[in-house]
Amino acid sequence: MSYFISFIIVLGVLVFFHELGHFLLARLCGVGVEKFSLGFGPRIVGKTIGITDYRISAIPLGGYVKMIGEEPGADIDPKDIPLSFTHKSVWKRFLIVAAGPAFNILLAVAIYFCFFQIYGMTRIEPVIGSVMEKSPAQAAGLQKGDRILAIQNRTMDTFDQMAIAITESQGKPITFTVKRAEVTFDVKITPGKEEKTMFGETVDTFLIGVASSPAHVQYLKLNPIQALSQSFVQTWQITRLMFVGIVQMIKGEVSAKNLGGPIMIAQMAGDQAKQGPLNLIYFIAFISINLAILNFLPIPVLDGGHLFFFIIEAFTGKPVNLKVRETAQQVGIFVLMALVVFVFYNDITRLIF
View 1 (tube, rainbow, N blue to C red):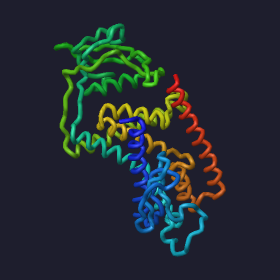
View 2 (view 1 turned 180 degrees about the vertical axis):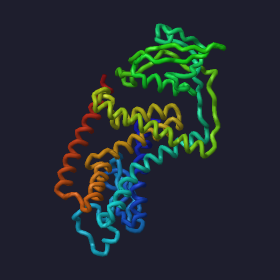
View 3 (view 1 turned 60 degrees about the vertical axis):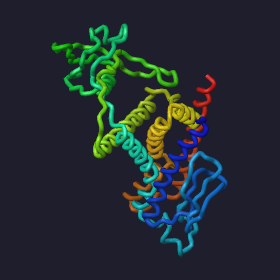
View 4 (view 1 turned 120 degrees about the horizontal axis):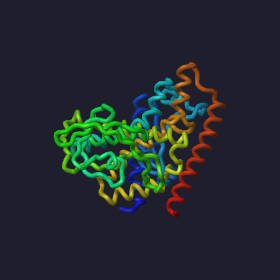
């Protein structure tokens, strides 16, 4: 499968679910929808049902739902006022706008649920399978077969928990409680720092230089309730990591060069597709969470910007001044365009270098 086709599939699924969220909540709240478009620009193909034109448009870089009375101050036929978005309560407008990114979150949850329900969950016990040469673990005397019972007196049930605890140390010395054969002992280890990202850049990641043991991997079948629970846990973990990444980028702790745009997404989608359709579907869930978080950011033009204005309106009892909104929209467009140029620059730089 080519990179372009993979990209179109990923983007098409993400945009469809995003706009479907807006559309369904709009109809549920009694708002008329004039257009439901996948893509921008000229209409290629479509069908009009009722008052809604369902269409596929020429530029496959997004989509939109056009609602009656969507723009404040727009001329509306008196008979359409009951269907007008602007004339609905602030909380209905809030729900309609929030439904787009919320549906992207739900898409990720649904994908993870299917994976956990069909394939179950892998659980790796905190047993050391190998120790790297000249690593902090080797210097501390850890050996293959050692079981990590606790770190800083916190019980370790899985290898992933152990990895998280090491990362959270931020390079400070931490105490490992280790079981070797029938002997239990404590050892203090200072995690090392530095690992390469997928783009060849160095980030602060803390490691002790051990790998898990293939002999201690368990495959757990999950019932629907467990699968649903784990799908929410997985979605939350990815969401949390993304927010941490945004904060670190703002602080300058992570390079903004890690940001990628359509070209990077196309590359990653193509790479995942080469590994099989299941990898591509899993990738869609990951990018869907990215899209949701981006849209929830309080930047004018994005859904989060509209939600921010609705919150102000809910507390003040009146809409934000039209001129303020127009100015904010202009600033938001400028910020968004600057971001688009920057991520395209990053993408092209990666291709060249």
